[in-house]
Length: 212
Image (cartoon, rainbow, N blue to C red; front, side):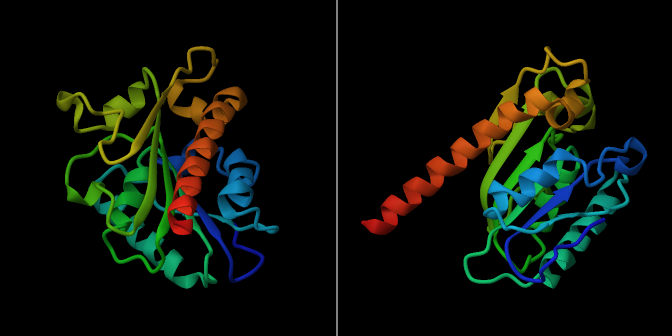
């Protein structure tokens, strides 16, 4: 939908979930673009957030095809030294990102943030070695996330054992839990504040180790 104004620099990729085109809400006014162009992409100073426009099909074949699209999108971007790659994914878009991490992406994924990701079993839906920080954020009582998960009997449909997990209470919102994480301003700012704090803590710890 949009491409960076410059061919090099940090990059944030947004990945919507199943049937995203019919659901709407993924135009340039989506607040996640603001997040991607800001702190996540080192305040890049230009539009450095892109949307992965995949089919939105609710099956492994379409998710794996989208994973290949993501791999190609990353390979086409020219990163300078120290530039970060972030992925911010909603619903099954998170599983697309996980699948792509096993396909030899050309740049390390510094931050993978998944929102309302249904848990799918299988190696394809675990983070590969090229994923740095992995944050998995869910809304409590999200029936859509529950229905999209095939790990319901394990009781892990809303969490990912490989991630730092956060569950958000969206009961104050007029929106359904699955969408409230993005389109309810107050709910979104809650997890966004938490996320920035987590990233800052990790980076401060890494800086301390480097100085030693």
